[in-house]
Image (cartoon, rainbow, N blue to C red; front, side, top):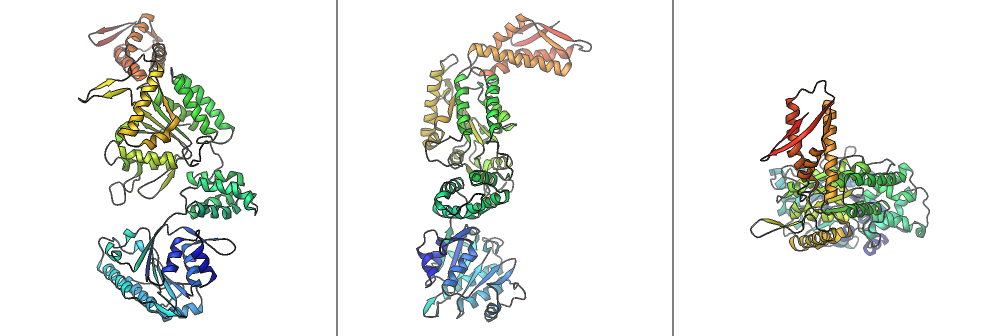
Length: 613
């Protein structure tokens, strides 16, 4: 054997599929390579490794074992020979392959004939069936031609014999390249140990590290000193967890095209993940600090009476902006930029906080999902997309599509406890790895997103008869609310869902909101009333005056029950004032009037009315 064959056999970074093939040529006539077949691979060529596609790696290994030629077939180009040359063309003619120009058109019947010729040749030749997943229209419903072809291939696997050449007995192998083994008829490989299958995985950490050192040559400032390059290579590898070597090469191409310095490895990876080749990273520079400061002021005016929750939430956000999320542990740098789990009573500002952050940081609305709509058994398919063959497969998943379109965004999952338990497995993957793969095989990344969950868990509890009773009530001190809600969340994740690991991922990112205090309720009421006055002014050009006794009466009605928070205040204001006001305004002629005064409001057995002056 040649030195290269020995290096491949002894090098853990070399592709496992190539080591298997070279080792098993003695006893296996056919091989099926599935999975990551379109990737690049590390070939151990002294003094380091070359990054090559599968075909070049395969040829390097086989030629080192004395093989003279690869016969290549795919459904588009037919049959070609590799490498090319006069001697190879003559060898092809011996095998019945006559390439006029670059390739020979071939039906499945012709391909089977060539397979038999290759397998029985007294020359070292291998045949590669590329894009083999595309040979049958459906592996479950073969045409007669397809069925006869696969029967012939199965028989060939059982009848082929090793070729004794130059003192060594080896098979002339047939290599199938498929996306999935299921793309071939199940009976073709069933209980057939003469066909060796290898699922090619994505590169591991060590393989990506070796590739990173070489790909860093595309960055400005590269020097041929491994010690100096080690920190940049480590960053590159950490940020590309789950990437193929081809993905890493594409990142390096971005760096080369944009002439990025080594210090901007993270920018190159971000550009690849988000599909944004620009330089404007909203998480970098002084602009983000100004946005956070503006958001802090905005939140303070929109979320009233929640000083502890707002302060905690902003601390988490500032930690995220400064890149210190998870700094105390070795964690995946691809995780979401920020995570907030907002828990507490309804109507106290949880969703309002998320909206305020989205507006100030991302200049838009959050990507919002009401999780009560995702309670069904297969609701996860709405988020990620249906598997191949199922209804809706072509449309993709709602979450996948949204994040692909807006990678820099705040993603809000409202009332998370109402989601189907299967969806929590997806959330765990988002929080841990910062990525999701759709049913169509598309991967989206959450590394530039803020993930916000809201929950009302722990405020009430359900009794055996189906009724609910409050666990904490309005007026309870914040410390009590905080304790009860955290206790309920712990029970929810550990006992009800049996997913304590998800609770661990949330950690300190749980922010508890308390009930609205009476003085805060008064401020919320006053703000809502001013919004009503502004709407009347904008719609009708009329100034709405409200007598002080009317304000007092409305305030008393709207803030009597604070169990539903600000949302309850708004609902009560709509019932007691906005609806009767609309009736009253509809019945009067406002033309020429600059002002109208609400002088009285009455409650007649639940029927409210206002008097205008």
